[in-house]
Length: 495
Image: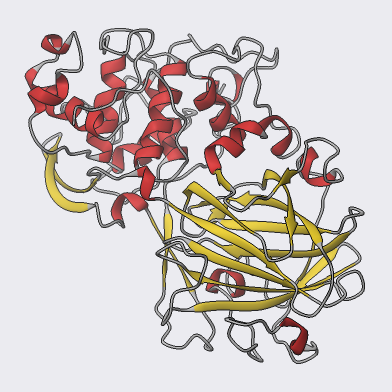
């Protein structure tokens, strides 16, 4: 029986650390492209290096995480215009399909926002390259008048949604956006622009290939490029499993979150946009989590109180379908974690290149429930076996085991003095010399959370489900893959 599904770690779905890259296109009028090449952020960031390291006597090539700053993750500014009409206000319902690997997580509700025409608002801290943002537009009577999607760019993205002169009859939206490095809400000069139309009809939206059948004069606005005949889409919109160009898709389905199917203002209060409105992704995900996730996803548990120290980490991983609870509605945060269970989580959370050959462990037969996870995570550089042909899959882990597994597998590095970094811990003297650099690297990269005493590593303490959730989520934060959730138990490195 697979304990991942039936006991400790149920509903494991892939939640990866990965990004897509931009393909340079010289002309803004050419079809704009987001590269469909899927690469792990662990091996595709300016902060990442590659070097050879010995693990279990084997030379392996591993990506290095070195001081990635989550504060530098991108966001977008959303403006709404109507050059040729007299509509005064709209409600923008905003949601996100987070990019992971070559797929997207299920759509998450980020709120309803009341816009006056020509207003803008910023959405910041935690969005990443390739994330798809969905915008449903409603008039003052809550009638759906437009739908579009756009992809987040590597820097801040300036997004302009331009309505027709009469959106109640012509439900066509022009989506015009591009990179906005200085965050002045204006697309930077000499950069690639994305420019296309979406047409709504009977709860279906079509991403139009061209503007040939559109009265484009009503979509021309000062400062915007002239409308091109052919739509300029990101490549992920025109190619691959999630292509949209030329297709008609339903704007609603039975699996959507409650907040995405209810009328604006009925479940949650709509937010009025003001002159300097700015919204953080982490706060939005947390605020709307119970009504903002897809149907049948459990994010609250009977034994996780509102003030539980790891609640945000547990609930967010549950919302992403990385982990789940038990049939009785509990999560059992204090239950221990085995090596096999950790392997299953690592397989589902991280995407990394293989850095060494797999081992046919004597105690992990092919029919063992975690056989694939153990084999794949070992190939990625996780776990130390010290030359043994046994994996010990049922061995319960302590906190040090989990910390060292993460530090070695993800190859975190640090700058400066390990002694100075480790001075934040009252039990630093108990850290063995061969582990000090690993713990220092995890500390400097903001991965470690200690409960109940932030100054105690408690390396010999049994690693619980709550501990592992916190450490895995914080590792994803350190790579810029998920928004941070402030916690008084997160260790802050000494500057």
